[in-house]
Image 1 (spheres, rainbow, N blue to C red):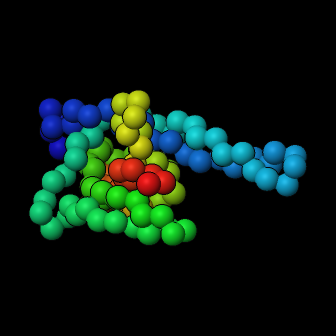
Image 2: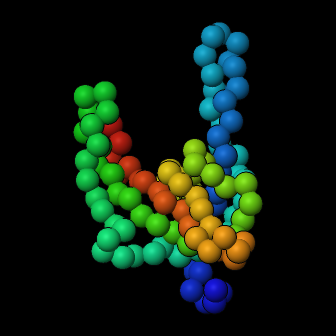
Length: 114
């Protein structure tokens, strides 16, 4: 994998739930790792659509991202790009099974709660 293609700084964050003492939980996102990556754009991989949750429609966009191989990344984590974009990781896998690169299948909510 050529380093010149990996131009976007991705911060991979892990979710931690802690009891708040009143029967609920507080969610905190902490940085797992920071890597450079790129978005893989293929017509068959990219799609946008709508998701209806709790009676509310949310516009979602799915995408795939490629990075150098990193251990410990799995579904349930999220990717932060810059200060505003948050992508939930649906799947993380090594396509060649050689420990060379990691592909992340992500979903991004375009307008949550609308």
